[in-house]
Length: 371
Length: 123
Image 1 (cartoon, rainbow over the protein chains, first blue to last red):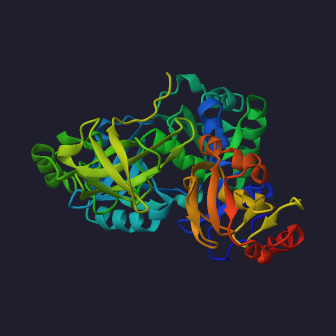
Image 2: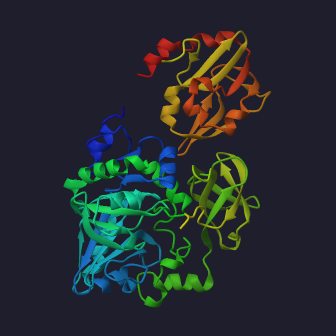
Image 3: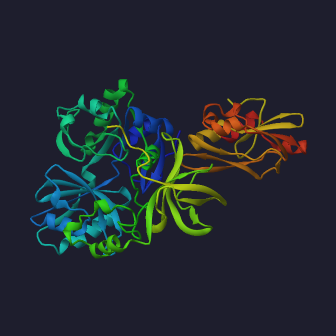
C-alpha cells in the first residue's frame, strides 16, 4: 500500500477515492496525484482501445472578464482569440516579450467579455501573477484565479462519447472537437468540452469540487461494461507523447520560442500585436537556429528527457521527451536539433547513459487516431 | 511468498544456485516498484561480472534501474527471449531468469538472504 504524503502536498477532491482504489500516488508539481492504477501499459492501451478516466483537477483555470477582455487576451496570448465563437476553444501560448513560453494554454470563450484560460498545474501561481500584471494596464479587464472552483475529469478513448452520453442529455455527437457547452452529467451541472491530451476522442468535464466524486464514480459505473478504467499521470504522459502533444517544462519553457517549438500554427500572425510578436515574426521569416522534431530510435535503447543529441560526433541538441510507448511499441521522443537537420530521415545519435545510440527524425504525430 | 529455493540480495535480485552455476533475476518486490518493464539490457555471453557491480539495466516506462551482480563469475547464458518480451518480468518475476553465471567463488553466496529473511527485509 502507498504511504501517506507529507502534509504540504495539495490534494484534488478525488484524493481519497484514488487511495481507496489502490492507485500508486506520486508528487507532481506540489500535488498528491495518481501515477497509475492497473499499470501504465494497461491504462495506455485502454485509452487507445476503449476509454480511460483521468483526474486532472490539479490543472488551473484563470478567467478574464470585462469590456476589454478580448483586447487583454489578444495581447497576452499568441493565437487569435477574435476567431473564437462563444463555446469555442483554441490552443495558445502565454508568451514573453521574447516570444518564449510562460505556459501553453487552452483559451475558452465563455462570452464576448469573458474568457477562461486552462493552464498547467505547475504554473498556476506564475501564470496568474503574469496575467494580472499585464491585464492591469489594459482598461476594463480583470483576471481571477478560479482554479479552486473546478475539479476536472477527462474521459478519453473511442468509447468515451457513448459512455458519457448515458449520463447526460447534452447531445455529444453534435459537439465538435474543441467546443464546449454546459449541461448535467450524472445530475450535476458541469461544463463539458470536447478536448483532451491523449490523441483520442474524448471529453473534459469541469465539475464543482463537492460533486467530483459522484461524477467520477458515475462515469466508471456507466463505463464498466465497456471496459472503462481509471488512468493516471503515467499513461497521460505516454499517450500525449505518441500523439506528439507538447509538455511544458519538457518540450518548451521560458527559454524556447513558439517557432522553435514548431508551434507556428498557434500564432495568429494577422494579429500583428502581442507579447513577443516581433521576435516570432522575425524567426518565421529568417528561421530559428533550432527546432523541435520528433524522432524514433533505430537501435536498441530508450532516449529520455535531458539526453544529449549528436550530429557527426558533435553535441548539437537535447532530448526533451522520450520513452518506449505502449501502443506503437517503439522508443520515440522529441528533441531540439539544428534547423538544417530537421528533414524526416535525418539520422543522429543520442547519448543513452554513455552509449551512442542511432535515431532518425520522423514526422509528427507518431500516432493519429482513426476518424 | 518468496520461493524457498532462491537466495536474495538487498538490491532485490534473486539467485538460483546449482553447484557452480547461478541463474539471476529480479524479485516480485522489484517488479512492483518498477512498474511495466519495457526494456532490458543484458551483458554478452563470456563477460566477467563482479559481485556488487552493475551487469545490466532494466527500464520501465518511467524509469531506468540498474541490475547488480549477486555473485562473481562468467556469464554463460543470456535470456534473449526475455529481452524480446521484457513484460514477462512483471508477470513471472521469479521464473524469468536473465543471465546464467559460472560462479568463481561460491563463498560469496553466504551473505545472500534466504526467503524468510528477504520477506522480512521487504516489509
